[in-house]
Every structure is written in C-alpha cells, then in structure tokens.
Image 1 (cartoon, rainbow, N blue to C red):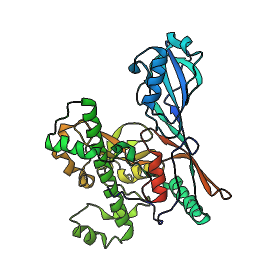
Image 2 (cartoon, rainbow, N blue to C red):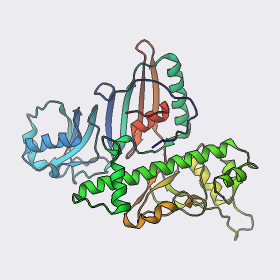
Image 3 (cartoon, rainbow, N blue to C red):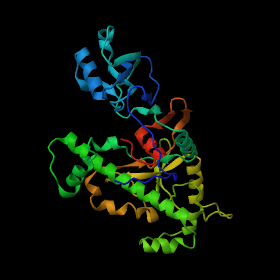
Image 4 (cartoon, one colour):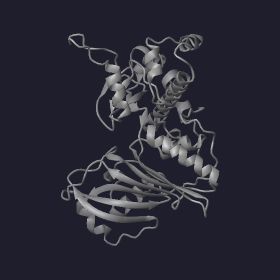
Length: 374
C-alpha cells in the first residue's frame, strides 16, 4: 500500500537497525501494582527474543504452561525490551537462581490479578538513527517539532501484516470470498490484518483529502471535489481548520487517550436566546487541545458508524462489515516526551518518546523519513 504522509518535506535518508543498542522499548503499565496478592509481577528485560520465546523459556523454568503467564503486549524480537509479566506467586522461589541468556529479571512485586493482554498504558522508546549528515539532522529536527506541535497519523506498522507483508490478502479472501481456514487463531490473524489494511487505506485517503483542502481556496473546492465525485455540506468548515488533519461532519471522535466515542455534529442550541457556538467548532477546539481525536474504523458490526460527510469514506466497507466484530481506533495520536539530539561526531540522531498502546514506533520513523522503514 502506498502510504500518505502529512509532513511536507522531502524524504530523509538515514540508517535504522532494530538491535539491542539502537532500539530500546520500556513498557509502561496501565496501573500501579498493589504490592500484594497471589500473582508475582516481574519486570523482564529481554534481548533478541520475541515475547512468546521469552514466556516459553520462563514457563519451562517454572514447570507451567505458557498460558499460565500473563503479559500485557507483544514486544519486538530485534532490540532490547522491558515488559511486565505475571506468574503464580507460589512459584517465586524457583526464580531465585534464574540465569538465562538474553533474559534478566529487573524487579519483583505482587498484584491481585493476572496481567491481561492490553493492560498497558503504552511504551517508551529510545531509537538511534545512524549515518545522519547535518542536513538530514536539521530536517529530522524540523519533523520532530512538527509532530510535537500537531501529533501524527496512527497507521498500523508493517509488523501487523506478517513477515512478507501480505497477510491482509489472505484475510480479504476469508472475508470477501469465504476462504476456509481451520486454525481459528490464524484466521483471526489474517482477518485482523485485512481490517488493519483497510484502516490504513482509509487514513491515507483522509490525509489526501486534508492536503486538497489546504491546497485550494474555498471558491475552488466545490469544483475540485466535483471532479472527484465528492460533495460536502459545508466547505467553509473544511477550509477554516488549521490542523493538518481536517475533521468532517459525522466523524466518530474519541476521548483521548481513552474514553467513549461520539459523532461530530454541526448544531447550535436553538433554545438559547443567544445562539451558542456550533458544536463542531467546540469539538474542533477540543481536538486542538488534545482532549479528543478522530477515529478510523476496523470494520465490523460492533463499531460505531460515521455519518454525513465522513461516511463517504467508510460506507463502501459495509458490504461485508456485518460479518466481523469491528471497533474504532484512534486515527491521530500525540507522542509524549518527544525529543531528539544530534551527535554530529558520530553522525547519530537519537530519539526519545512515549506512544500509547497499539501505536508503532516505526510509524513515527516513517513519518519523519517520509518513506518505508523495514
């Protein structure tokens, strides 16, 4: 898929390698652990192992099944990653002399419940880019400042689509052509990849739309969109927005960084003697303040549907949407604590940042580089 980028600089060349010196991930738990309970909470540091490989090694050491170990999220194999797992507290003594290559236990505490998938706030990253000349470093710094100011699109990373990047094609055959897959876990993997692919396509189309809105005057927009067989209700609303991602009437907005979803409308309270500011402008201000963000759809029957102008980009997906569960996903996110430092003597550029769960560090790198990072 040809992904769209919201930044407008030319592509930047640098070298990025996921290894345990240049790619470091530190998981941030969703909540504080209680310090007491029947589950032992371990903070694990692993190198060059998948989460499943690490869990399998520890399970074998404890004499339990892999499924008896709780974890919040999957971490990359290539790199140094820190994450939390839970094991039955009664087995703690078996870890007293734990000595395994590429796995270290950094800390121990206790909690009442087993860690479940998704029980993380997000991840902190340290990434070192190499072979960065001064011109590229200046461009990277500029891109970092833009992302700090506006945030960034929340594309699914290449990791979502399998080692060959084509899992979504199998998922498409399952959903649209009725391809039978007996292994239900593999079937979910393929279908999820297809849903993610459609999300990325939708997000790319919305970024294209946003660039068109910025590139033409309010008088030109109706004719431009007419050539694309598009028609919107309020062109002045589109043109008045200063954020690079333009909201549409009927978008499904979500409270950020967590909370309920709702439809973005353009209404005033006619019961008031003095008309209030339109609902759209109020919610637009909340987007600028990072209280809410637009969401894209992982198509399925449980997902809230967009309306009016926004539905133009989602309605084609519903020919098969009822076959799946579905959900909404943040279309736009705001990396926290984002900073960059250029080490000119080594030609390195070092990045530090926090991303909410479900977001990809490689997506941020690709936005900066304006090219694929694999």
